[in-house]
Length: 310
Ligand code: SF4
Image: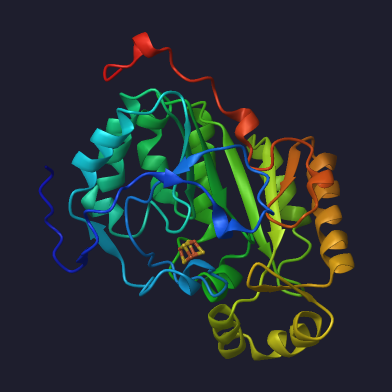
């Protein structure tokens, strides 16, 4: 077991529950991802994004917790896998601020490196670049979320996440290690970040091959945060979501035609810059020019003989 020197965060009391589970976001039927598994090295997240959906279904999500038996449970469960895609993470960020100090996700990568599974990393942190040396040895993709290239705007809507300027530098580092990078421009919030033309050009110039996007979905708690932080924006959005919009899987969505228009624009910008495009949980799979989550970029699984644990 790893020694944890950091005592300011609590342990998740549910440490005995299985770590790896079937990836099944919201069980809404809108997900077009290939079959995969997921696990979260941490419970909760400290990035405090206004629009976060996970706060609506994970109790106390904004308080970061470690998992008591994380490494031995992961080692045991990952040994049973046979080439599956493992998403890390679907309802938290594997690179919260304390990961620089704790290195738990780095320890997880060392375990995964010895397995046969293929890895998708989802993060909003530049700390991921620290692990480029391990990621280049794992069949993996890294999906960084960048909702805007404006550090000031990001500081309002994602107040505790590293600024996008740092995330762009992380992309450069990962690509220089031949790690395929996907960028999630997600969520698109009308009047806030709905025409990221400059960002898309920048991403293409860095060597990003795939963009995934979706529109902001209102849940009770993220709407409360948005109205408190951006009251004028919320007033403009209110009729779109609460009068003209639709309800799907427990969320309020923009009107269908507006979602289609925003996402068609994203697809146009992406393809004009020679990248592939996917939409996430919108019911517009016809807009996908490749597997929605960028898994087409995933290197093949290692042969069993290459895996020390196989
Ligand atoms: S990084 Fe993801 S999980 Fe963390 S607060 Fe932001 S949206 Fe929620």
